[in-house]
Structures are given as C-alpha cells and as structure tokens.
Image (cartoon, rainbow, N blue to C red):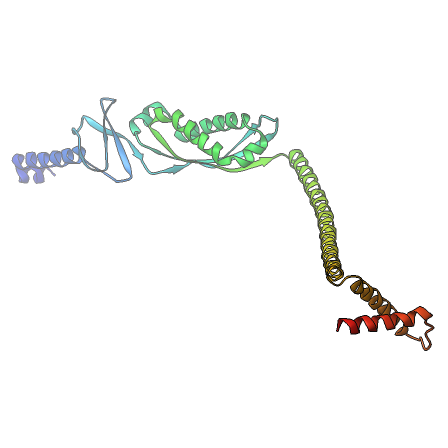
Length: 295
C-alpha cells in the first residue's frame, strides 16, 4: 500500500482528494426533484427553502433535504362514525376524503399525522352537520351535506397547507330498530296510497256515470225539442191552411185523421171483420169530397 502511495506521489493524491471533494460537492449541491414531489430544505435545523420539480441548487454541506413530500392526491381510508340526527335517530356514516399537500413546509412543521388529523376533523364536522338535520333530510340532501363537509374541512386544514379535493358520504346506515320502524311506516304509506287510489277510482266512476246520465238527459231533451219543433211546424202549416182555405181545410184535416185511424184499426193483425159506425162511412165520404174539392 505504501509502495502504491509512493508510486502515485503526493501531488496525485491531492488531485484525487480534490476530485472526490468536487464530486461530493456537486452531489450535495445539485438536487433533482421528481414531478410528483417537493423537497423541504433545512439549514442548521431551520427551514431554508422548498424545492419544486426539476433541477435545484443548494449550498453544499450547509443545506440538507430534510423532508421529501409527495404532492399527489391522496385518499383517506374509509372512516365510519356514529352521529345522532336532530330527531334523535342514531346513524352510522361512512365517509371518504381526498386531499393533496400544496405547501409541504406547513404540513411537516405543523402536524405530525396528516391522515389522522383530517379523519378526526371530518368526523367532528359530520357529527355536527347531521346533528342539525332530520333523518329524512340526511337521506334526501346528501349532496348538500357533502358540500358542507368539504367547505368546513377545507377551512379547518388550510393552516396545514392541505387542499381537500373531494369529500364523499359513502353510506348512511341505521340501527335495526329504526330500520324496522321505517319499514312499518313505508308499508303504512303504501297502504294509504292504495286506499287513496281506490277512492279516486270510485269517485271517477261516479263522475263518469253522472256525466253519462247528463249526456243522455241532454240528448233526450234535444229529441223532445226537435219533436216539439216539428209538431209546432205542422200545427203552423195546418193553421196557415185553415186561414187561407177557411173551415173546409179544418174539416179536411179532421176527416183525414178519421180515415187514418180507421185504416190503422183495419190493418191490425188477426182482424178479419171490422165493424164501423154509421158516421165512419160519412167520414170517408167527407174526406173524398174535400179531397176532390181541393183538386
């Protein structure tokens, strides 16, 4: 070994040491940060700088990369917590939160366990939000509750340099007693709706029957009006004829009606012999004379 050192000479050793020191200095002073990370740099134990993605330069041997923080979006494990609604119903809510670190210098120096801190904050906000709502509102206004949770969580974690990108309520579970009570209420509501539907059907049937009777009465009245108009018209014609032709027209009409009545009697089924009173023959004669006279 000594022979090797003597062979290299003192000058060469110095050059090798300088080269090694230069390489180490470059290695310590140049930092390449991946796109998905940020580096927190300290100098003598205090925050010096935050390095973004790409090539960065620091002071060798003085500045040290103390924390390498991922800035990718993260998902908290699904968390379940109990809450009581304003109408005193115990529910179990499953939540999930997505977040990412924007300012790692705040995160690493202000909070030790980010996931646990966010989970605790979400649990408190969920309990408070559900406590202000009734069970029906929790079931129907889930999106409103999610938006409220996201806003309040974002405000709570702002000092930690964290952005909450998404908050979800995965499920709202009820205890067995409440579920059975709701099932009974649902069945009662279905029965009530069925009764209402049946009553509506009966009422509609009565209305339709009344409409049919009204329609029939209207048509019958219309038929009577038409018949009355026809009779009035016929009476008017007879009156006009009497006015124009005098008593002969009236006698003609009377005789014609007698002839029509006798003809109807004679044409009856099973009538082989018809007995006519003496004045009936006179009626035929009078009608013939009047008819001849009108001709």
